[in-house]
Image 1 (tube, rainbow, N blue to C red):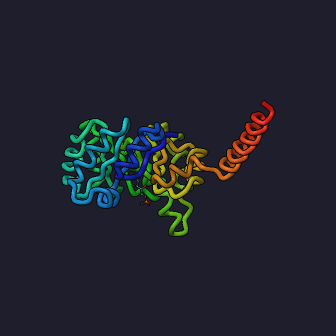
Image 2 (tube, protein in one colour):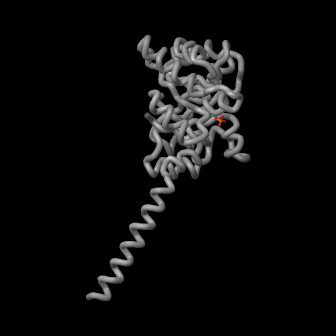
Image 3 (spheres, helix red, strand yellow):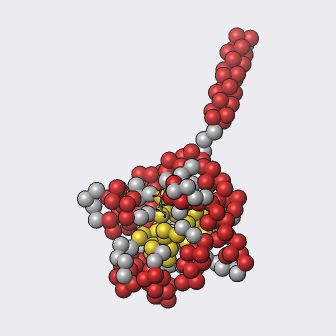
Length: 222
Ligand code: E4P
């Protein structure tokens, strides 16, 4: 499973990319508004694209088909690795078809059911993004959407990639991987947690302690 970082924070992207931990980045208007300050968000997106050797999702803010299409074309010009993010609405599906016909890769975002994922795939999306955490927040089982979408896509050999989004904790990542999601996108804080286990720290402390005891005995004996 590929791992994407869900952020527009340049320092975080630089770190994760240099550490070889990520295959791509997803952004959204909220993340860009948090990270960009007074800087033109297109400049931030260009910088992100230069830092990452993989797809970078950049979202349109228009909500009519023509506006989304035009904005998508502009975003796609920022860099070769831009993937245009289009919301899962009726007008959006028209924009997806037009962008795909022009050779632009599209990530359909804000998917909350497996049939929305199916519709987005039929429109030609390269990625569909079911939002797990936001479904969990309202008492649903977000992972069920990934599970159903995986079965549907496999039943019909649909190549659209399932991008598990709105990930809140490492268990979400493990379950998405077990189900067979193609990608999981997560905030930096979750990516860092994937590296951690308290028994690893405890085990290392003990090894180092025992080694220093041995080292001081060996010195005494020498
Ligand atoms: C995905 O592409 C979205 O940017 C993101 O995963 C949304 O996550 P949130 O629900 O934590 O805002």
